Image 1 (cartoon, rainbow, N blue to C red):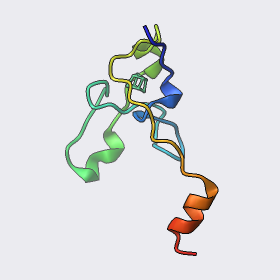
Image 2 (cartoon, helix red, strand yellow; image 1 turned 180 degrees about the vertical axis):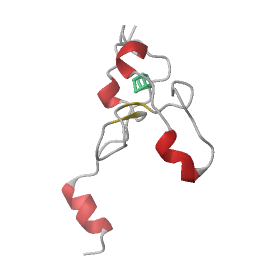
Image 3 (cartoon, rainbow, N blue to C red; image 1 turned 30 degrees about the horizontal axis):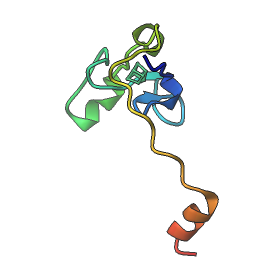
Image 4 (spheres, helix red, strand yellow; image 1 turned 90 degrees about the vertical axis):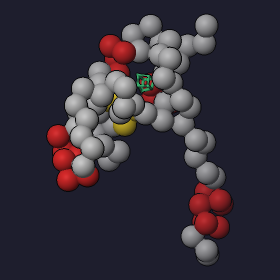
Amino acid sequence: MTQVECKNCRHFRQAPYEAPRTGCWHPDNMLVTQKDAYLDEQQAPGNHIKINLRHNCAEFEARAPRPSLLQRILSMGA
Ligand code: SF4
């Protein structure tokens, strides 16, 4: 079985830049979810360490590869 790391998963977000709290933001794993955008601060992610304790999380989805520096410059229209 393939071993997966949360840091390579698109559902893993780290505070403070990606999310208000570090954890698993997969909708099925979150502790508290809110539908309305103005209640976003109340949302709480799941504990990624516990969920992926055996490195075999079924909800793992690989992050999209980061574009190269040249691709990012070209996307800005420079
Ligand atoms: S627990 Fe699973 S879904 Fe959540 S961040 Fe880790 S690998 Fe991704």
